[in-house]
Length: 198
Image (cartoon, rainbow, N blue to C red; front, side):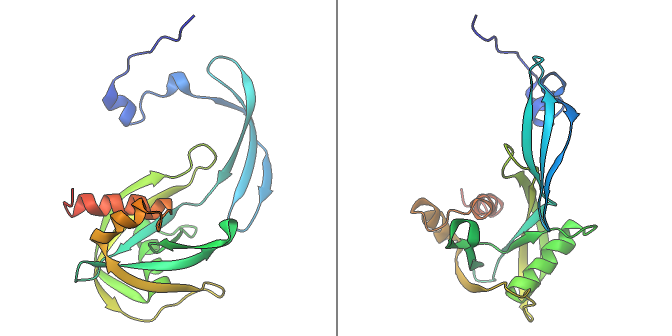
């Protein structure tokens, strides 16, 4: 028998208010691994159709990504080696939220730590969940403007290179594969929307 599509209210679905019929019930939760940053869980759940199965997922404290805008329509980017993939990536500054830390405080701290800049003007652009199939991580995007140079305060082992580029050139960098980092691509989409580039 073919599946029947259920009609839902788009506004309710967008607001996350139409999920009761799709919710999975947690029957048992187990911490499989606890590290300094991540916790991995292996839960037993009951699906809406009654099927019982496992769900493995990573709990992440959340993070921010900062789009540092220079006054001349350039943005600051970083080149940083990422161990899981064994290569260097081009990224906007970003970092995890410390326990009890407000989102804006985290964004301001990460910008200063990684780039040595402070910003006088901040705007929250939005948020996204980058790996909904296996992690609860949420990343909030901030636009930082009116930058003033201070001193970088990087953690030991945090080695990166800073450079600036015209933000209008970054779309081509995504197309040709020079930028593949998800948070940077999404940040660029928000930047283009906020500045009316499309």
